[in-house]
Length: 212
Image (cartoon, rainbow, N blue to C red):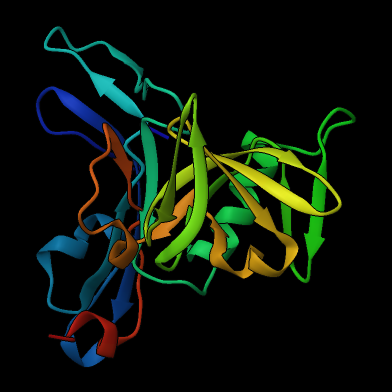
């Protein structure tokens, strides 16, 4: 809470702060409480995470930060990793259940650990120059790696995806070309534009952070 540990700097986004400190031991001096942590050599701060859920006005009042826009077309969650609790696999499962939960009027298909459900946000993950699409009276071929669309129908023999008006039918054998896209990797987002981006900040392996 604000009384315990709260980060703010002038006006703008702010919120409660979570810190992790490392105690180097008695040989670096005495230590009584964490109010002294910033003024001694014994305690090292190794983690500081601010949950910026509030917005402070110039008048000093606080309000909740609102992220406006359509969760499917305007807002994109991007994360560096596929695994871990904040990787694309876990985030997509959680976001699917929050944004597009199972419903009596929704059709779905269970494939191993994935569930494709009508209304889901999905991405084509490889170039397919032979995949046919229809848009009103126009027809053509080609759906490409990184294209994001929304599932409109799930039937026993195919899944229908809408790519900004281009309607594509995926036969069951082609569903390995689709992934959920509520959250995508930084790599997959390259070349794309979104009105609002949400990126989780977390600790990872040293190799990932030092890679050229």
